[in-house]
Length: 242
Length: 242
Image (tube, rainbow over all chains, first blue to last red):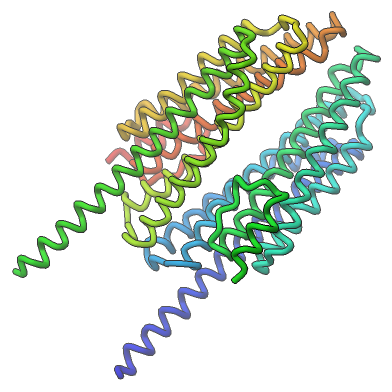
């Protein structure tokens, strides 16, 4: 047995594991920033805080920069380490996840822009109760999806995917009642539209959290469940229990 | 020189090139299906053809299936061939592109669902002129982005990215005039909202075409321009002329 070469390959593999860990750590840092952006955007809206809204809007660049940096890092790992099996899945899941996180960042920045418009219009629009409720739900989904990613926690990931259906139905109900408000008071159309865009952004954030959860299932199980109905997830994941 | 091994490696490399070509061909087939979905969704809307709208909605599953299949194929190439440099960039660009094409498919299906709602409501809503105009613009962007991908055509890709700004401003103008219609005629609120969702879907399709164009620049130049303002693209791409 060639001890030198064995030590060498152990060294390589230690280095490689370190790079994979780093990749995950950077993804989590990006996730943390994006969570903060969503939280601040909603707070800016509900408190009518235009400075905070502006800060969210301006911070979007930092989210974008993180995506580019992490993707570059992931591509470097692919090129230099040529990972296979679960390592390859981890790197691909990270690349997919940065794309969803970046889009959650975009939605946060849309919420901030609409919050600014509402503060300027000086109207306390209808629908804030619904926004608060759905935003809490959606923020929990994002947090849980990131935790599931960090811990490779399949059960939590399945839970997130299933919650997305609840958010979708809350969203539909809220939109319907906003439309009724519009009809009753046409002068409020413009501000209610802003609230509708905000709800739409929240619903999209829920979809992205759902995507993140699906990547966790993919990376742990090697199972692509991106187009599996959430009520069939338990079955699918169960069948492939490792 | 070991002729056998050389022939062997030539064989491998021919096989590998074939796999990369196949990957591109399958992406183009997916692109073709998605283009058709957008075209049919708009036709269903403008002609009030509810059967066609239902077909678009039901076809979305085929788009999703293609994404899963191509992503699996791309992952297999990564695992078995461990590509580097421009080959690696091609595979990564394909993985990113299927995600955008799948989302364009989703938007087409949203347009179809809103078209169905409008046909049921039996109202010829305002804003059809704007929808037709923007949809032509956006469809051209998708077509050009796919052509740019197929031909590795940087100039065409830069053109697509720059057109996205025009679409965004057409979208903003159209939304503003729809809001005015709503205020003038509150009974039309529900149908105008449907048209607004359709415009929003078209604007999103433009964003995805823009993303596709950016992947072309990435794969040809090795340059990630995803968060570069389109008026600075010429500069950036020019600097890196190969």
